[in-house]
Amino acid sequence: MPHKAKQSGTDAGSRGGSGGGAPRVLVAVSRYNASVTDALLEGAVEAYTDRVGRSGELEIVGVPGAFELTAAARAGAVCGRFDGVAALGCIIKGETSHDEYIAHAVAQGLTAITVSTGMPIGLGVLTVNIAAQARARAGGKKGNKGREAMEALLDTIELVRAIEAGEDEGVATSGGRAIPDKARGGGGRAVGRGVKGKR
Image (cartoon, rainbow, N blue to C red; front, side, top):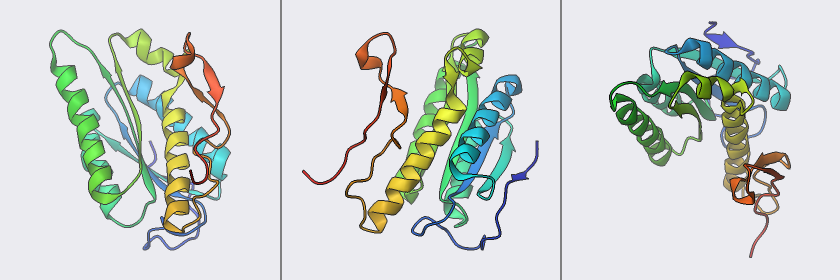
């Protein structure tokens, strides 16, 4: 897997979070269960290029397993080079409860990074009971959670930029695309309008 992909000519020494231009995104992907995480990565890259174009800036790093995603995400959050981090992994239940400890640690660790640094993080870590469930969510009948994580991350970067610039009134949080709405029943999807303006 390449370490770097789709780099623009912008200055890599400054964080673009408060400015405009293509968002700089670090993708940290677990190499454990690579047959699934490779598909998640493909979905995330496609979502980024669909939205930003190939002139954007995307850097990809592999980590040994899901637990190590937090170290890579924190490094991306504090180095000053990125606007956001997408964390991709796949945790499949085994014979013990080890998977539960890993899943909780990763979710709490990534949340703590966002809270402490303000860096948006896209959560694309699958936590499933069997491999078939993972495959269904990595480009199968349940969609691609890597793509969804990247889309959510880009939405959040856009919103954070608008808030920091004082231009958040009228900003839609979903970009007008269809988003999951399980409350509708049957796992339906509805066009997300976001929350706009002042109340």
